[in-house]
Amino acid sequence: IFNISFLTGVFWLMLCEFIQDFVYDVDPGDKEFDEDLFMVTFGIESNDHFYNILLVTYFAVTSLSTVGFGDYHPRGNTERMATALILLFGVAIFSYIMGIFIGIIDQIS
Image (cartoon, rainbow, N blue to C red):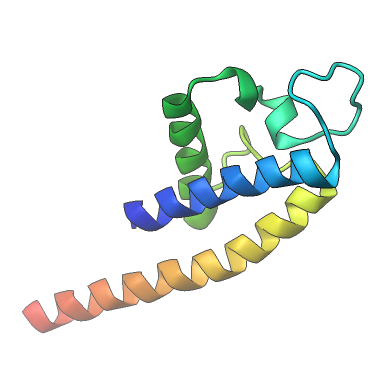
């Protein structure tokens, strides 16, 4: 479960960088940009890599487990659409893995 959350978080980080760089064509630290994006709002460009990986893994765990604290969330419409697709597939995979674990526990019992 942690590996899936980690990979989903890294995919989310790469997707946000793609959206920022190619969809909106924003340079890091651009103060005149008024679009509300995940990378710009939470200052991802100014953090070190370890902190960013921890942040997006936390985001993925809270999203895939459907807890969703709301402290880190998609900001722009393009990010919201991408997150909806990630959550559809992520929750399905998460549920499948939990079903396997329940089957293993039933066999042990």
